[in-house]
Length: 369
Image (cartoon, rainbow, N blue to C red; front, side, top):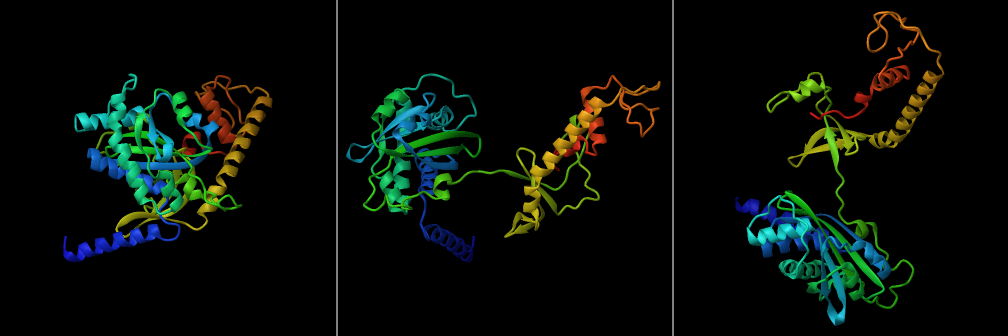
């Protein structure tokens, strides 16, 4: 790397840091995400990142639903006798133990053995480093006060005893989804801290109300970008092997459709690039496509229902000989006659054809190219 490249990288980092601290400053959720990643790298030499983070405000009576006896429960010591809580699921705890004992994380079940004080002690360095780092990274005074002075205390035997140790009227609950060892496994962590006493005037209307970013922080929303679909028989699909080529002749390779993980198309766009990275530019009107998806789906359901009712009220038809498994080969094309021995799948396909609907298989996203 040349000196010019080094300066360019440094300038981008400084610009990014300036953007984070501008306005309201770095939020407590972003501070926690950065702190847990740095703590895992510095203390355990472990690649760990928080791919999801949410924040909620709860009263003491509502904390029970955030504490699960299937997790490792830890009591946190705070300033002036204050107490907090932290929990780790078995996947995250197992990864920390494997990293400290074998130097690598194995994708193996963590078992169901009871937790011990040794398990809690092995997490103490990460907890202390994370809480200290997050306190230093926060820019907002109220967030710094919330994290100030907390450190690892002891393992809690169960959620009931931990709840009895928590004192306060209002608590902040942070749920972190952890990506461990470069995506090898995922775990979860929950942090509960009492809300510090608010200064005079903080209880006025509109004061201290959390914004959308403060509540939800970083939440992953996955969309799949598809440049086309190919329909293949199941027998041909089962014979495919690495290196096989799918034909794309006659397709617009720059046209892209965005699908949700539930298989719903939400937008259209075109493929391009920005700053050397692949990108998708949404077409004008793509939002209207997404808004109309539910209406189109409802109309299709109504069409199917009406077609089914029409079939139920239709008098039975007489089939000619030599009829195939589907529609009768010798039947008049305008008579809409159906054999009595149709399978449910054949009947559904025939009803869809009468209603003017595409086949069920073509209405769903196929294997992406």
